[in-house]
Structure formats: structure tokens, C-alpha cells
Amino acid sequence: MEYGLDLEYSFNEFLKGFGLSSEIAHIIWLPLPMLLVLVAAVVGVLVTVWLERKISAAAQQRIGPEYAGALGVLQPIADGLKLLVKEDIIPAKADGILFTAGPILVLVPVILSWLIVPFGQNLLISNVGIGIFLWIALSSIQPIGLLMSGYASNNKYSLLGGLRAAAQSISYEIPLALSVLAIVLMTNSLSTVDIVNQQSGFGILSWNIWRQPVGFIVFWICALAECERLPFDLPEAEEELVAGYQTEYAGMKFALFYLGSYINLILSALLVSILYLGGWGFPIPVELIAKFLNLPINAPFIQVFTASIGIVMTVLKAYLLVFIAILLRWTTPRVRIDQLLDLGWKFLLPISLANLLITAGLKLAFPKFFGG
Amino acid sequence: MSIAITTQFICFTVLSLVVIIGALGVVLLESIVYSAFLLGGVFMSVAGLYLLLNASFVAAAQVLVYVGAVNVLIIFAIMLVNKKEDLKPISDIKSRRIISTSICLTLLSLLIRVDLTNAWSLSSPQNSIGEESTIRIGEHLFSDYLLPFEVASVLLLMAMIGAIVLARRDVMSKDISTGLPVDQELIEKSYEPLLTNKN
Image (cartoon, rainbow over all chains, first blue to last red; front, side, top):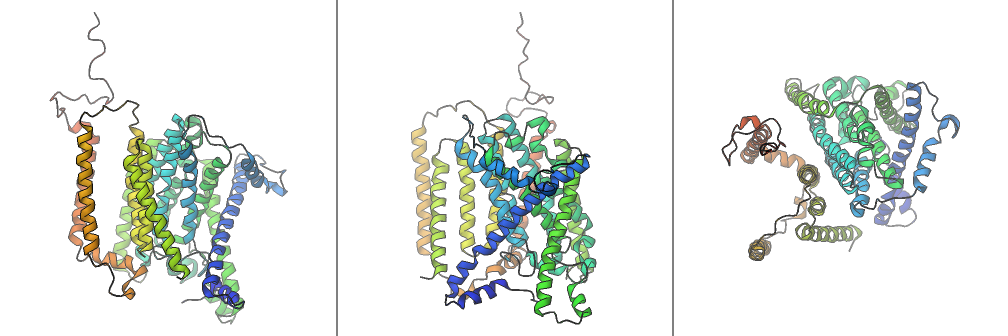
């Protein structure tokens, strides 16, 4: 059921109207969705930073930022500008090349992973066949950047932070991948678009969260651990390690870490909403609404309506999860390193393995409900 | 030459250069940390070459396994064992270098011979399966390559058990080399008591 707007096709047709060849039109088209997604990611970070400040203030019965714009909405922009014009310091004893390459290696895989985030049937940069597997592979690069910056800072707190970050990242990747595998088993495909389409049959009732409740919880815990959000923010635990691997960083390089961690948080929230909460799907199927209003599903009005509701739903679900993550950050204490590794290896890993096994069994027993 | 082919050519040249220069750096650089990070770069570029061959699943698996697991482990090990001591100079370093160079050159000539004698061209370009390859790899793994696949899992299990045995010292009550009973309380504790020759 291929429906929805094909913006690329209409854009290329529009350019061909000016007498350009299809190749040139394609080259002009290529950077547009990338730029759009990059801008969306950065705006998403600004919104999340503002939310974090406001919600943390509410959790601690403060007011939070209020002078920069209405309700302090311009505060994150002020923060960003401050970081942009700050002096860029490389410590004298640090390793200059690795010190600079570290933050880049942390940020680039996260941004690359936005390649596979769909906001609608055709509203993603590239519907690659390996889809969700690409994200798992890319997120495994990040620890190298963390280790690199931890080592290059030539500071014991940085090195300890980097080592902790890498250990945490490696241990939580396994249950994460296993819970994604259960979803893939049900979908018969790695593509994120297929994963969402498989959940679109009966609106809210067919979302994966009802069929994979255990997987949902395991994935969310692991995603928080991968983002180094608070119950699991050991790599940058202020009281023990100053700021972990970020200790020696200032200015724009620090901003890259900051940006990377928030983009990663939004990305994880988006992926949870895609894998478990029906992605761009409205709680009531749009086809039903169209039938109710007696409109054909291919009418241009319905098409635009579907596309915009898809974007709104994806972003809404993601920000609901971001809200939960922020609340968790300001209400839960930090776990110890042994508790963290115990939770990962002795609890989440067996549970996600059992979940995978049960999913496979249920798929054989009830192919109708668990994907044939 | 169309734009797609030009792009492919540029990507191939850049990736190959990174692979060759990076691999030389891994071998020739003095600092072991730089070597480890360069190794990660080489693995990434090899993944890029797979991507150019339309093998996206293999490319992602290469990134996940070699960069995300193997290389991270190597760097991890280097950083945990960051001793500041100078290594002992090896006495017959020259002859060792000559032997290893000749072995490497023999291997290289063997590979070049394989490259020259093998017929690489596909029977027809339509045979490339692209996105289908993930499914095809899965089918092969569970049919004609089932035995190697399962044997590899047994190998990994053995390695895991070995690692656990090494990590849990209480399994070994005697030191293998000296035959003395192993002190199991603190691994870092000195074997020689500090206060024996007090008088």
C-alpha cells in the first residue's frame, strides 16, 4: 500500500520543467532532506534543552529561565551563542589531534543515524534495507570517540570517564540489540518504514508496545543508558569525576558533546516511538477517518493531512518520551557502577534473551498476531 | 562518464587510499594508541568499500563487529594497561624484521596471484541483488553454511568460558609456572612480604 506524498518525485519534475537533466535535479534534491533533518535535529535539541531547564526547575520548585524571551524560550540559543564565542582551549599536555577528533567521532554517528528516522511513508532521507541495524552499528562507534577524548585529555578523571562510558555502552548494546531483534522477527524486515507499517493496521491497538511490553521496557532502559541519562550517567558523574571525559573541554568542542548527547536522546525517543508506539501512526487509523468523512484516501487534501499528522504524531510521541526521560533524570538517584553492570548483564540480558525466545515461539504459534 | 560512476570512482579512490595509508600507519607508528585508533579508521574504510559493492548488511556488520567490538576492546585493553615503562630492546631485531617482511611479501605475492588468476567479472550485472542480500545471507547461514555457523558459536562459547576461568582466580589454586599456591585475596598484592628482612 504505497501512498503518501512523494516530494522527491514532484521536486524533480518541477526542476525538469526548467530544462534540467534528471541527474542534475537529483543532485540538487539530495542535500535538501539532509539539511532539513539536520535543522530539525538542532531545533529539537534547543527545545529539549529548554524543556530540561523548565522541567527541572518545576521538579525543584524553582522558576527556571524566564528573562530570555517569553518563559525563557530563547535561553538555549543564548547558551549556544555563549559556547560558540568562547575560547577554544586545548590543554598543554593534551594530545591535540585526538583531542579534536574525539568530539567529532561522538557527534557524527549520532547525526548519521537520523538517516533512518521516518516521519511518514516517504518522509525520511533514505529507506535503506538494513534500517534499524544501521543505527545499532553506528551507535557502536561512539565509545571510540569517548575513549579517544578521555585518553587525549591526559587527565585521570577524563580517562576514567571515557573507560566507564565505553564499558557502559558495550554492556547495554547487547540487550538493546536483542530487543530490537524481537521486533525485527515480528516485522520480517529491518527497515524502519516496514516496522511502522506493520503496526498501522488497527491504530493504537496494533502498536508493538502491547505485543512487546518487556522489550519496550528493556529497550527504554538501554536507550537511557546509551544516552548516559541520569540513572546511568556514571561517565560524567559530577561528584566523583568532575565531568568525566568532558572535563578538559571548553567552547565549541564541549558544545559538540552537549549537542551529541541531546541529539542522541531525541533519536532514542524517536526510535522508541517508531519501534513500539506506531511511529507516525495516529491512534485511530487515518483510513477509518477518511472513510467516515467519505473522502478517497488518495485525495490531495487527505494526503497533506496524513503527512502533517504523521510528523505531528512522531514528534509528539518522541517528546512525550523525552519528557519522561527528563523527569527520570531529576527524580532518580544515580546507580553505582557495579549495580549498573549487574543490571545490564544479570537482569536485562537474560530477560531480553527470554523475550526473543518467547517472541519466536509466539510467532510460530500465532502467526496472525505476531507477524507470519 | 555519468555522475553516479564519477562519484563511485572518487569514493573508491579515497577509501582505498585511507585503507592503505591507515594500514601502513598501524604498522609503522611508534605509539600504540595511534595504531589502535588508525586500525578503527581502516575498518571503517573497509566497511565503506563493502558499501560501494552494494553489500550494505556486510558493511554494517563490519562496523558493528570490527569497529564497535574488536577495536573498542583493543583500545580498552591498551588504556587499562597503560604502563609508563620502556620496553626491553630486542637483541636480534634486524633478523626478526627481515623474516617478518619476507613472510608478509610472500603473502602479498600469493594474494596478487589470486587477484590475477581469478575471473572477477560477474556473469551479468543483473545478478547483483542489493537489498535482498540480507535475506540471502540468512538463508545461506541456516542451510549450507549451518555447520561453520554453529562451530563458530561453540568457539565463542569456549572463549567465553576461558575468559571466565581466567577472571575467577579461585578456580586455579596453584600458579602454573612456579607451582606455588596462588594468593587469592588481592591480585595486586606483592608476592614478597614487605617486612621479612626487618632486622
